[in-house]
Image (cartoon, rainbow, N blue to C red):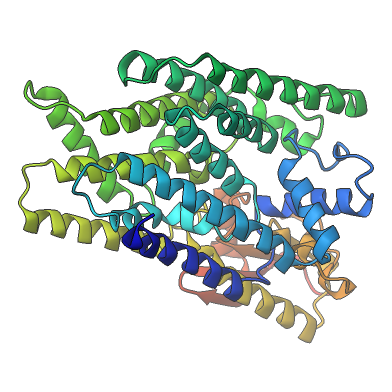
Length: 474
């Protein structure tokens, strides 16, 4: 890298290091909490098995949770140690993204536009969450770079890593197979027989994982854990329609609408013009983007598993790279290009403040807005302790029962026994807009009929303790 390239990449790398230090004790959150339980099981059982019991297991391969358990073994069981692992993954993903931009930005485009690509709100949020999505993104970016550069060993690592990180790695591998074929046919990629080894090795290793898991648990892919099994059922037509709408919303959410609409318009101009064609770098990005969008749509929309914007991070990044290239070739004046870029940057940063009404499901792990939850959660716990409100009279759909694991604390004070959620028998209920499990009917019912005892809020994120008026104090 030359001096300018080093400076640009250093900005992102230093930002990630700074993020690590200010958030090094940030608890496990949302789906990351389930990873904490699984990593703790492997750690506490001294790696006797990498397949966690069905009561914890959703079917996903164990690469991420095993990595956390290994880091705990080396550095001690702590949140900061797990976040140090995440920092390494984040910097690796950022470097692969930088290489992808450097390879595919058209001549004359400043590498400063790498920063525009990197500030996607969902990607930024995921760099702070101890889930396996950043590791998946790292392997996706490594896969694209190694495929284009015909590096079969790195491509093998990427495909194998995808399949061992998350079951979505299956869709990603299918997408890579299609991209590989289309690159050879339409994007001037030379056929290299060695590159096929990556698929063989990856599938053999993944098959080995499935065999081991089946021998230990008696099932693969579709978990027998009732909390996860329903996520992989075929959806009805009404649910498919809702999923399709959610898919589009996820693409345009958190400010991305201001990037994707101009992107669509510029693509429309290119495809309708006889004189304009996509350059080879743009064509490769367009092929990869189109394949991932189609494969993910077919893989997610027909099924019952709730979709999160984080599932589409690779699409957000590819879309931004393609936008930068098309903008550089557009007929817009320099002033209008700068104005459009300024609007998009502002929109993307504003995405961290996009908060919908409580009755609309939101991807809370897809913007930094969720960071406002934890201080208010502490205030709520303090209120409950100070006012001697019995925890066994409180229902909630928040993961408050798992506070001790979220913070990796030993004290029982942070592992209270909340009541099972039952709006007929719960004397109290703690509701926060940072959860999507409470039904719209129950949210409206509590807002209209129950007594709000106390509310703590910060920048649109809130927790409210409601009291059921139908149940009198003992």
